[in-house]
Length: 166
Length: 180
Picture 1 (tube, chains in turn red, cyan):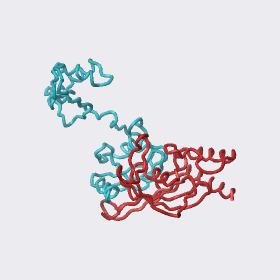
Picture 2 (cartoon, rainbow over the protein chains, first blue to last red):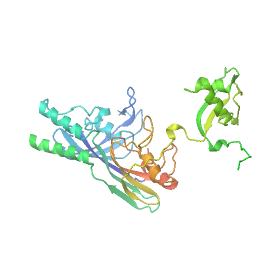
Picture 3 (tube, rainbow over the protein chains, first blue to last red):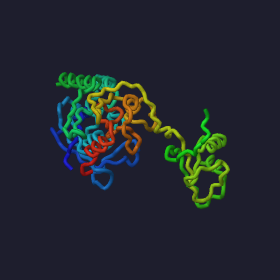
Picture 4 (cartoon, rainbow over the protein chains, first blue to last red):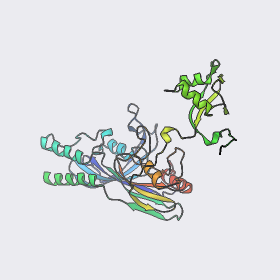
């Protein structure tokens, strides 16, 4: 079947993503020990197929702003796939992103990150674009949305910090 | 005016809340006592009331509280209202509707809003808001009116909701039907 839907997310992730773009493939299933988490099974012997295409939008020092296009839509797909790549989502408590995963040990840095956590009290993930074929008219419809205020402010703080640090 | 023709309730119109199958070794036991053993927080009085109201069925036949359960019997407790976890209370929660027509709508979900009721979240969900703002949303298999796909609670962003059965099927195929 031809692909007639699209979902594009924007995520702020820990670390400087090495490639400008790439594809993450890896089956997803419930974590064997922690039922609240999903986990990647690269061998494909368990779980369901999942594919995420990512692209770096902006490098902000210890974090990166990425766009993620879903080929499949599995539970926690982006959160788990990005963690698998070594770039857990910023402030994603369930997957350990609410700790300082990159950066320095300076008190000032810790204060800066704690403040950023407060500005964005949730995982830094927004479903920005949604596209599908209209069921009645068959017309392709595409919707785009703004990054919400809490996330936009957090990104702005990181932008400022990375400029200042350079 | 009183309605003299008290009709036996039709099973099709009721919602199943409990279903048990008596094990092979089941000794004959009054159904009210049987249910006492299986339903948490049940009282004999409540069960007998339910029996009087016609809520207890064995092998698809309405029974009285003194019915003796035998091995292999299928015992069901049915009520006129859906089970609590599926009881959707319409709530006047403002929604950011980006687009709407006869077939569907696109909502921009705010961060923190849960999409559908479930473990621990029975109010304040997107579904509670949707059933308030829209009548006759189609039901999918899991009693989540209009829902085609989901977004995690703490993720914000765009979500499409179907307003008709046909739109629901069409959209679900587009999101989940591709070689998966």
